[in-house]
Image (cartoon, rainbow, N blue to C red; front, side):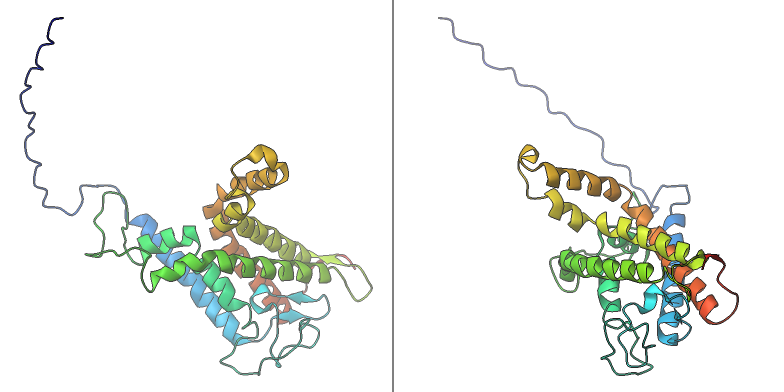
Length: 272
């Protein structure tokens, strides 16, 4: 047998050093526009929502049982008796919102949402603001330490958001009435459109998708859960869209009910 030849030594491959770049980024496009719009959009919604939540007025139309989602469920002793379906057990205080039971969970659900994390990390925290743009912070410890470790609680806030979506659905059902019986007006269409969008956002949540099929190893053995996982996956693909459109629908629904409750105009009625 002949001895195999020793492998030939190959010359070391070298490359010229990387060119020094003085600018923070070489991007010439308007990369800052998306973070700026995100800051303006979220800030505007927070200002409006905060003002409405603590206004504690013009939130209920007893004639048609229109209740704004910002005040649902209304559990304060200052709530209208007809609007307080779950009872009035919180003290009436200008510093305590009428829907103090649900609002913290809804805010935390959105604050820990995977899409919203991306949105405010890039816009408010500049971490990083855009691709190929330096991070606004010198160090990053991830979501393994306080306070960002609380982001891992998103799955638990999903259950609360699911329950509140059910309550909003009940509100929309109860609003399908008039002084003469069954009724349908423009306010009903606004309420149902908001509820439908909220369900699309809630059920498209990453946590919901994981609950449906995240632990399955054989989809063929779980056809029902596979079907549910497929449906939530389709909603999850448009999670960013529903995250933004529900902010708009919540504000529009609240403003419409406020306008009718304040007597700015009458609710157009189609039936009843």
